[in-house]
Length: 308
Image 1 (cartoon, rainbow, N blue to C red):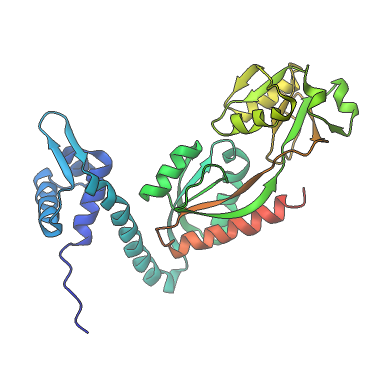
Image 2 (cartoon, rainbow, N blue to C red):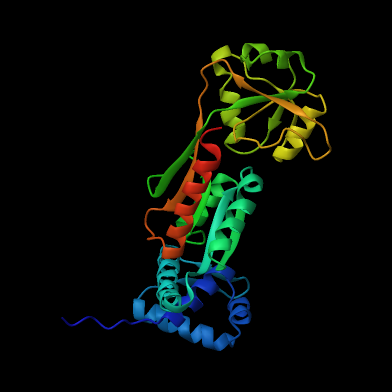
């Protein structure tokens, strides 16, 4: 069977991806350690071979991607990753698994998850390197769509149909209270119990709305007296006696960085839980090293937290 001859090279695709990420011939040339005319020539040849314009060249303000260029960018990244995997597979025959992983993690989940997962995985696979991005949900989904992220640890919130999601844990919300608050005498706290207690809010996209929605059954959402995008700050404010908060990821310590303590109580009401899992682009086949890490995350997270 005769295969059609490819009209592009991996070198041209690498130039295209780097230029698309920097939107500058000069910056791309510097990053790739080649001359600017070499990049310009290679990309002009690529556009001619594809018979499609990838960039709009602005005389005074650099470059911008055309719609075709935006669509090609994710496919080019995926192809380069597959080519890298082929090279790594040949290397692995003698040396074991190697390569790099672009890992996204919801910013509130990063402190308890990333250090342990990465360090333990690298003990088994020391030739693996990581590039991590701790970000809100919207930014991670963009990274999965455009191929700049291989996978992301996040919740099942606002996921489009082109995202594959592997559920790992169901996480019901819980209340944290100052150590000496009267409600700590209860084994479980109702939403009604919290009506007149000052609310300290974890102010992150999606999380913010999710926690407030819990109160819709009462017909009135709490107005926070304090809010922060940092979970540790929220826990610290609660531990220092200013009010209660609601979280959902399991905690291994109830002591804050300033030495204060808080108390955890479950809800007595039936409240909606969220699901923690691994998100990946449905349109990009994961490389072997990514599949290995995803399976490691599944086993480790479920073993550590499923029974809590």
